[in-house]
Image 1 (cartoon, helix red, strand yellow):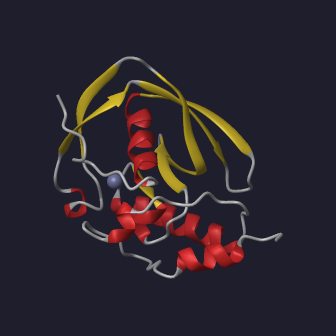
Image 2 (cartoon, rainbow, N blue to C red):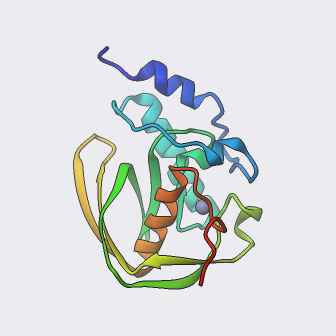
Length: 163
Ligand SMILES: [Zn+2]
């Protein structure tokens, strides 16, 4: 096999533009599959993610939130939306802190939750050409990345009891 198109096509079936899935949609609880080939389907999902984050004014969005169960997220890196495929946290601070977060899939972001996150993280990922990238993120950026990476494993705000 030289292409992952059949798998991608399968995971695209439910993508609906301008719609962000809400709990308890099962797509939000699915462990997403890694991206192997950066074909047109994957580029299209990336475009919809970027458009959606900017439209909603969110800090980030993950592919399962638009019905596509592949490991692709979009986070705001300052004012710029950034697409990351197969992101993995490879290092994290021992220090954690609790802050409030919303999620566009839970009451359209209107319900604040408390979540404990690492203060900084190091992430390895691929960009939309399949090129390896390494990112060190702090504070809000790190928080958004941790939130979106959780989505790829079906983990949602409110799953952890925060002390
Ligand atoms: Zn979310």
